[in-house]
Length: 469
Ligand code: URP
Ligand code: ZN
Ligand code: ZN
Image 1 (cartoon, rainbow, N blue to C red):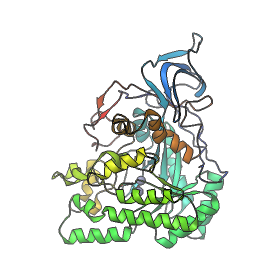
Image 2: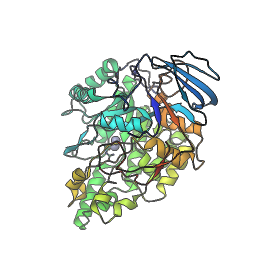
Image 3: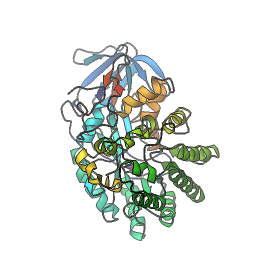
Image 4: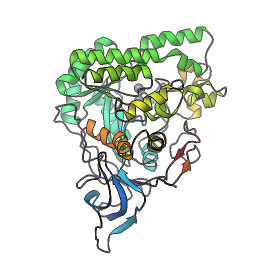
């Protein structure tokens, strides 16, 4: 296999809590065994020296050597001397950075009558090939039960070859869910809960439920996350499209315009403000949503905005392709917006209105996408990105001068580690941190395509874009 980044990841345990809360809870999610070259290929007794690279953290960079023992960074200093049993890698002229952390993935997720084609092995192999060494996935409750949902995801995650954490979706609310949320936080270490304001009839929650959930998050010191689109209005928009005879993938975008994302973002922010609890808005795809976040943050409200790589680098033109297979691969929610939204989101990432970049990696192959050949409402929603995120943030944001190399580390790794309280064990190259390390050669280049990517899906929405080896 051809690897784009060198990477080294620890097989260590993961403590997952989040720093926007007072929670003391913890979660140990053990990565599986190493999978040769694909996974954490270094045995825990490996001694390693990465020599002469530019070591980049979110706030500092210096030319230095990084010495690693047993999966932990032991020293970061110029000109370290080591014994003969130490493997040495020359990183001269390259950037040595913390591995990426993807805050938003869906591996082995049952959704829209099918299951994502990447499971916890193939999705993580793709992540590692692209320089991401940890991800946080969303547990979906089973018939509303959080406990059953967690058991199911623990089973799925047995295939893991890298460190991971869990958020949990809340799809209904009653006394038992309220109790189970407490168990998740106090015993299972899951303390970020996602509320879907869209997907009417399946995952969607109404305002009453959202309010109850926000109150419970506040009392537990947990972090509330929202998928912000007005699901009732989307449902109405979809009916309108079908009545107009618009059944193709373009109907997906037309039925759920930015207005509906802006409305739901504003509503969730106001309700979180009313309850006085922090809010994390996932996959911010439009100027409308971003402006609501900017306004709230300016007023001092604790709101985090997560753009995803598709929203930052793509526009909706693909959805209008006359070939269904091509157009349907771009169907995700909220939709990829018209050109212009992406540039403004890039600006918001560079000026700090948006803080960290996820992927919402949720892939279906072309056979699965074809479920919606006669009706866009049946096209499984989701695009790839777990393997491409680091490359595309570098290409779009660093190469263009919109952010610095330090900012790159911050938005792809450190900020996520801080928000979910795993910093500085993750998200930093400092003594004592896990040796989740990538080496990037700024002078290299390769083309992204579906033939050479590591995901199981047969298409790639970033076909033809460029990355660094
Ligand atoms: O289209 C998407 N985003 N699929 C994954 C589920 C979600 O909304 O995050
Ligand atoms: Zn979502
Ligand atoms: Zn998602």
